[in-house]
Amino acid sequence: MNLLYTYQKFSIFQSDVTRNFQVDFAGKSVSMSFCELLSFREKLKRIDLQTHFEGADSVEILSLCNKRHLFIFDTLDIIHLKELVRGAFISMAYQNVLV
Amino acid sequence: MKDIARQELSIHIEVMDMLNDQIQKEAQSSTAYLAMASWCDQQGLENSAQFFYAQAEEERTHMMKIFRFINDNGGNAMAPATSAVNHDFTSLEEVFSDALAHEVGITKSIHKLVAKSRAEHDYATDAFLQWFVTEQMEEEQTMRRALDILKLGEKMSLLQLDERIAELNTAQ
Image (tube, rainbow over all chains, first blue to last red):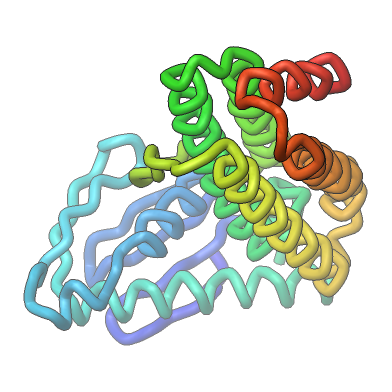
């Protein structure tokens, strides 16, 4: 299992054997296919942090991997997760350059 | 470490995001043209209505083309949500003028996509988008031709103008 990126209490690993990604949500580990990781990225991307700062929302409920997992994240978690996924994809892009 | 992302996804991730944005824009265009078709229908301008019904269908075809391209290449195409569109027009000229402005906006968006895919060396998407570049030129030409017809026929009745619009339906 190779570490792709870590940010605050979250990390993303890649397994070359299973071709899956392991996302560590501060202790709870979730295995995702690339497609599920893309979907997770999209869900994070669509969260408008402005509504959090304006006080309309303070938590986000995310169902991941075709409803296999349900998470409740606060604003800070969402900020950190957005950074985590951004960093992981940049790391993967570097792999593309290096391989 | 294996480059799993590249093996799973043939297109650049940020280009994929922009393609998803484009899907939303094409869907929004389709809805806008449907509203225009409805207005024309209500005014009894059957040929113009027919023209915009066809345009609405065409925009949906564009949307589906991009949608399939993303999924076929391992990406994650997102079904678009559309917002409210304008249903109120004061004249047929305004309808076509809005339609032309709309097409110019879509062309700019496609050009940005082409620029981005070239910047990211995503030549597959660049090649895919060339069809849209040509298509947008044709779309703009059609809208301009419609506006020309309306301007040239200032002394004609609205129904006579609508009959001239039928020429565009056959040309499409």
